[in-house]
Length: 120
Image (tube, rainbow, N blue to C red; front, top):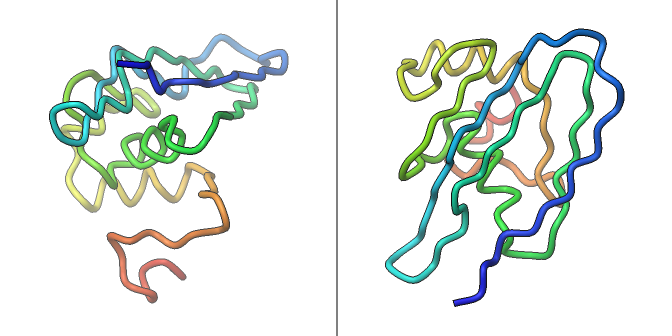
């Protein structure tokens, strides 16, 4: 089966070596044969800018949804601001989401939230 993962990472020079986001061996599948994320590793340092690019279906939105706790992942570890997001409750996740800027294609709303929650 063809690996659907394709990503390009563009980085600027970091100001420090403080890790803000760490993803280790992240896996996510939809059903038996649809592996979208297959062992992704990524570190974002303070002062860096990160761009995820790839064709449709390559896992860009899935990574972001996993990153902010909107979608559970199958295996791996995600830490934001040195906090393991799998261990956070909804209130703690919302505090992380406020500090993380991200935009889905076409400025889409979160399907897991109502309109009021999306606007907040």
